[in-house]
Length: 289
Image 1 (tube, rainbow, N blue to C red):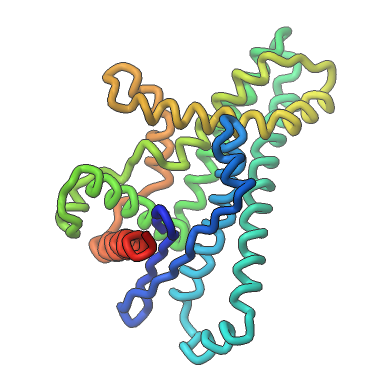
Image 2: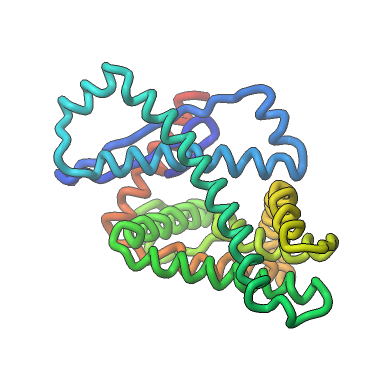
C-alpha cells in the first residue's frame, strides 16, 4: 500500500497473474485535519487513522488473493452494499486491534516484572528499565515467531518491497525491478521505528512518576499511554529530520534494527507489484489535482 497526496492505493497480484488495484480517496475531515497540526496530538490521530486504513487494505489484499470467489460473487457483494459495511467494520476492527495490542504490550511487561523482580530494586527507575527490557523481549519474540508463518513472511516481504520502491524513487532512479532490488529493505520513516520509540519513550516518561502499589502502576501506564504515543511520534519525526546528520542519524538506528524483523527480501514479482502500486498512486494524484 502507498499513500499519496489524494489517495491510498493497494495492488494485489491475483492467481491468474493479473494485478488488481484498490484506490481509496483521502477524505479530509476539518476537525481531524486541525488535530493533525497539533504537536503530540497529531501522533495519536495519525496512528489510529493508519490502523483503520491498513486494516481495510489488508482485507482487500486477502480477499483478492484468496481462491474460491469468482468475479460474479464479488460484484454481487458490491451491489448489495456489503463491501461498504465490510470496509467500515474492518476499519473499526483495525483500530480496536491496535488499541488491544498496545494495552497488552503496555500491561503485561509490568505484571511480569512485578511478579519476578519486585524485590530486586529499591528505586523505581530500575524496575522501569526492567519493564522496558521485558517489553522489548516480548515484542521481538512475538514478531519473530509470527514471521515464521508463510502468510506473515509474505506480508513482510511486501513490506520490504515498499521500502525499496520508496528509496529508489527518492534516489531519482527509474523504477524498474532491477534498479529497485538494489536498495535496502530498511527505511527511516517506517512505522516499525515508531514501535521501538514507544518502548524507549515509555521507560523515560514512567521514571517521572512514582507509584505505591501494583494497581497504581498499571493505572499510570494506561493513563500515560496516549502521552507515550504522542511523544514517540514527535521523536520519530525528529529523528527523520536528522537522518542526514552524520552523528545524530544514529538516533534512528533502533527502529532500523527492528525492521530487520518486520521486512524481508522480496522476490522480483513482489517488487513488480509494489512498483505498479506506486505508479498507480502517482497517476491518481495527477488526475485528482
